[in-house]
Length: 155
Image (cartoon, rainbow, N blue to C red; front, side):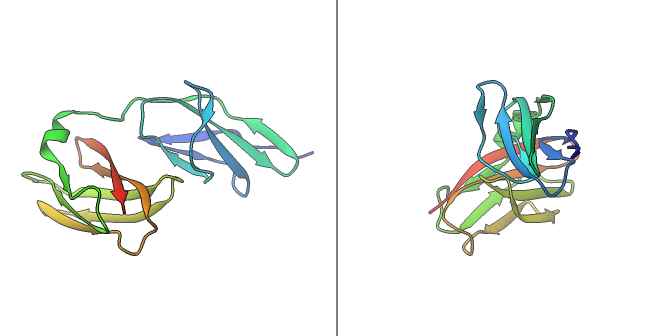
């Protein structure tokens, strides 16, 4: 008999199914729709309840709901962080304002895959996505006090 691990690790805005080697369908429990992405991890871009349907062998089961409430924390960040041009053909300039700490940023595809991760202490950086496929991406920026997520359009 096959046993499926239905536990999900909730780390800030990223949910990870603990069962490895399976097929994953992430669900938005607020509207009943599946969200884009079939990877083991999913980074939420909207507050709400999420679950994952896990297919492992011939077994299909759904995890318990996980609540995400951190999207948009500290709205002041919206006034501090600016990203331009957006849309872009590949180079995005990010201004972090008066940055006094280490900033981590990751670029996440709509499938939930992290395509780039960097750390910086600078006030400005260039994100180069020119080698990535055209489409929608999300930039997740964190420092010791803030989380900021913004949609990027790569043309």
